[in-house]
Image 1 (spheres, one colour):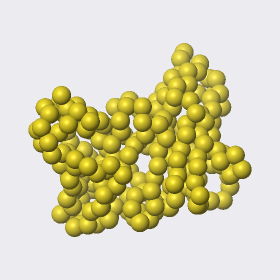
Image 2: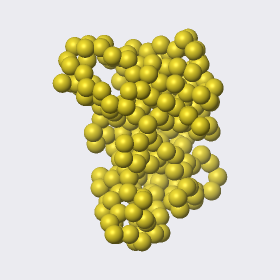
Image 3: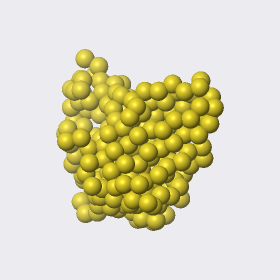
Image 4: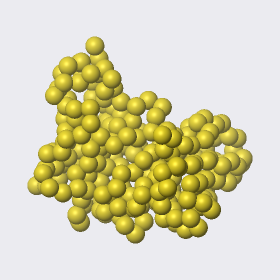
Length: 117
Length: 114
């Protein structure tokens, strides 16, 4: 069975500071990893995903994540955050699909990033 | 671009009432999904559909029903609402069910059962 652990429920940070949101996963099969962002009262938007290839994945809005198989981690980073990055961030793992016979998408509990001026 | 559209955005139900959450996508996607998001938790899959006329249960289907009569529409019905169904509901769609494709989420429907 797959699972995802987001180690921090809340991360406060000052504007222009770097940030790392931590994510660890557990899976006995091939993994595909995702980060989604949810702005207040909105749906989820894909930030980036790792399917294969380079372990450093670049996404939208200046975010990047690194897949570390030995540490079973997929931490999200941004070198300098803006007020507009204030949102909730979800890490997710899949064994191939989004639901059903293709595989399942399992979400972590989320990390609320609060960027202060 | 409309994408995935959900209605209503907000709803308060009394215990025992029933209602339908509507979901429409205009991207001609075969796969559609309903998730729920409880406070402090990640999304959990309620039901999914691989095409018109075909639906199947996800992780938390109890208390819900779905239908898929057209490619575009995937309504979620709550029968005999209970306080445990207070949650945010997200509809989503993808061209196929595999992760090589992107899944698109609606903006959510906030449901409170009192």
